[in-house]
Length: 115
Length: 113
Image (cartoon, rainbow over all chains, first blue to last red; front, side, top):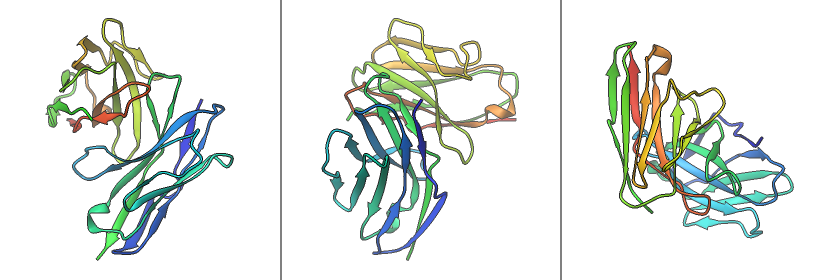
């Protein structure tokens, strides 16, 4: 069975600075998807970024980028030029290509942004 | 991506009663998923719902406690039955398939007293 681990329950960053959230996972599959989701207090799950395992190039979305290390089974999220609106719970998630689309989530990292 | 309207957004219920949560998608989706998020915790999959077949439940979740309906490709319900305070959680529905992005409803915050 696949597992996802986020070892940082809380992180803090100064506005305009850069922060990196860590995620590791365990799987025996060679092809899969990895995601970072943001959950603000509104509870709405918002997709931040997605990475296909077969792609060597790291995904980027504006201020958000990932460092995907397949051999190490590591998938960290870097947020550049942090903004107050980035404050939220961030979840790393794994999706198998063979299990119908269900997501396996990490424990989450609570990010606070200081003005 | 598609939009899911989830109702109710929150409810306070008496123990021993049942609550049905509804999710309406603005387009047809193959798979729908129901997750539970206990206070301060991550999301845990309860079950996967396909149209025309019984839902597939994850370990630790049973149909008698969490019956699910999926009458068509745009709608699903989850019922939390015979509730106890331990059922107090956020319940989220999600849609999508193996090759499509997952999208979520707004969540239902359930408090059982």
